[in-house]
Length: 265
Image (cartoon, rainbow, N blue to C red; front, side, top):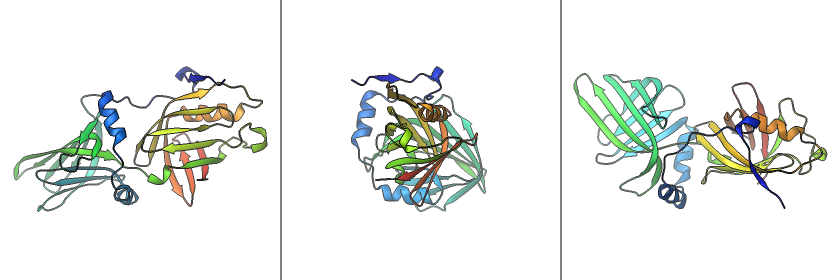
């Protein structure tokens, strides 16, 4: 019988993603809501937008781009384009603050990780958002709503590893063949095997960044554990950029580690 082991940080297997303060009931409600019009968010992601938010009364939208730009739109008002974007931590670990310059003043965006429901469409989001617009010629305006980080929906698939820097991948030497990762974006989970043991755990996606959380894995001895050990050691770096080009998935870390996968499903 297979047993499962939560891989500790001390073994350099995986580090934890940022914890959520959501209650169990909030997590259940989020998991029960289907992704609303994924093509809408995919189109925004492909345009370089990493975070989207919206609110009502009055209706407004916010796009934060991967490069140095924020665009805020309010119904029947002139679109506000903000540049010189700066990122800073908020009052607690689950809040992020973006500040940017506009033509007439400053735009401040507070993003707090907590479940949020759009009060018109009923769509569930993972973040509460507050937008403050400060102009020298008028009083400060504050808008509240919901938002989410965007990601590439094409990641939601099964991927087999073809390359890994400083690792020789020989299918015949691995008990289960080439390492395989399967991403479930609705549940924000990853599962698969590293050539020997099965594993599963959480992921977090922000634009073209992916973070791996703690993994649980079967504890089975195989003739050659070298590849598996190097994969888990690599994932202990936790944060990677990712890109998908011609059915190939590339994960890269700041340290120069690179893994290449091919789509199989």
